[in-house]
Image (cartoon, rainbow, N blue to C red; front, side):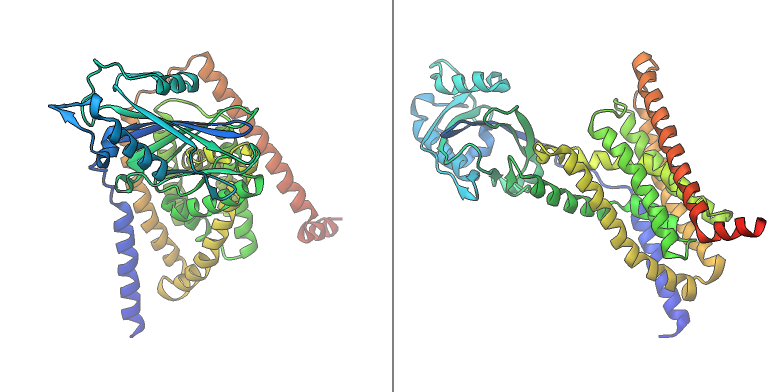
Length: 442
């Protein structure tokens, strides 16, 4: 294959990738969601699982009907089949050993019942008999159940796994409120795709899980990867590249930590605003590469845009913080470590490929302009699409609370920026080139 043919083929691949990334994502056509609501309470010798399951998930139990309503007088065998199914498909384990219930009771309930808002109300409701006159339509009510499990110790490692209705994938959610002995209640939301989920993980297990989550998140975030590409296109030295990427990491860690502790602005406007700004950061960096200029302060630009990307990372993390247990800070730090490791992996692949492209296929400054223009094209499509969503949401009013939040973030950014500038200045003064220059001046 000649060099010209290889160049044409590679160009077509790049253009194809740009076209793919620029296409808007298709919405899910199937929008039905179902919720299984449960409580797990740990006592000295027993674990209690009180759960509410929609009847349409338990069709295999075959509840008898009279017309459109369930025949309550003849429903006991079907209830027993449903209890066996729930106990089999929602498994609770202790130290890796599956628990077997010593007692399981259940009853049918109307869709209008609100007993599962609190554990005590749900427990009392399951124990109460069904009124004979209750008219429960097939596929529209609930099975409410109480499972009691003997346990070896309340300090064991407990886990839960749902394999219920795997064909519904993430549309069937299991909301669990877990109450360990002598500790506050914690909530989590899992699906059949979550696998085995630790209810009270040790710190090192939580840390390992969030490191993996951080790596997966950065590798699947195309917009973050394109931003990284724009950062390193004009950079040739590995040390300078690591410094720029580290500034980006420190900055997004700052806003990620604040968001995790509930300090981020609230409202429907903020997520699309963040997504729009992330796309705008890609466009800006690509245009800066095209226009040329001084890249010595690129670490500062990376840090400023890193603050915005941190909010974006927080939206990918918030649904998983429920699995941190008591180790929120450790999990946040581990997630950031995972993102940094993922970025280093990307750079180890990206920099050699980029070097080959800029030496052979897109040689010289023209190559940097062509690559940056392709990325700018993708970023511009994303920015306009996300901006259209942003303008359709209701913007917040600048009340006292909103101004206070804004003032806190501005002050925090100024403090962090000033500290970073001080550190960079001290490092430059301590560098050999700076020392040599000062000696020559004297």
